[in-house]
Amino acid sequence: MRSFLVAAVQVKSGPDKGDNLEKACTWVRAAASQGADLVALPEVFSWRGAPERSGSEAEPIPGRTTDLMSGLARELGIHLVAGSILEQGVPASPHDLPFNTTTLFGPDGSLLALYRKIHLFDVDLPGKVTVRESALRRAGDEVVTARTALGTIGLAVCYDLRFPELFRRLADAGAEIVVMPSAFTRTTGQAHWEPLVRARAIENQCFMVAPNQFGAGPHGFADYGNSLVVDPWGEVIARGPDDDAAVVSARLDAGVLERVRRELPSLRHRRLA
Image (cartoon, rainbow, N blue to C red; front, side):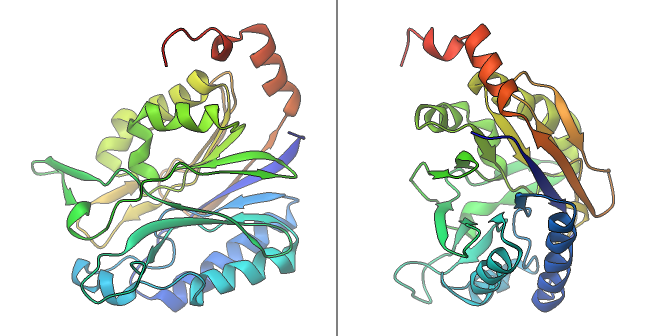
């Protein structure tokens, strides 16, 4: 891994895909203009709307949104994690539920990795948050990392954060940086967002880059904002606001990663698989 500037883009997406994409491109360009080599958008950045429209808003990959993100990465010469989009079932069928899929593009616009969210958000917190993501989306089943010029990048999405076994498998696959696009709710975020992001960084001695949505969404509850970048010691090195769009940037220092893994080599001390 080498040292570089990373940027997590925090936005509030709605049901107008064209508007969402225009704003996402503006923020990614702003991040690149600040010198970011890796830029990450949040979960479902390109469309958030009525649940019954999920199927009709799903896209193939490659398709409209990923073609745009590929071109943007190439134009700016950056690595770009394109949040997540609703990906048409493979093979496409009107009866198939879409995947919740994040993609990683290289500076030449090439698709370096594609990850389909494994853990789907099915919760019922009465009077606060009730969601059944599994009624609208299909779950993926592959753990995904990509070796890049910046280091080895692992991918996760939002609710995955609560499942430490996924992050340990990413670490076992060599992940030095885990990028986790999210739309973490305000209710659960106030209680658990920072502790869990920091825990995953500490346990796996990796950088965590967690861009999050903010503000009231189309489902009747708000998202938490507070996008985070956390280092392998568990220190929060960048944080977004509660309720506004932002570019949240920090320098990922390869020396910190090397020092933590050398001085406290817990990954090598494991006795249970």
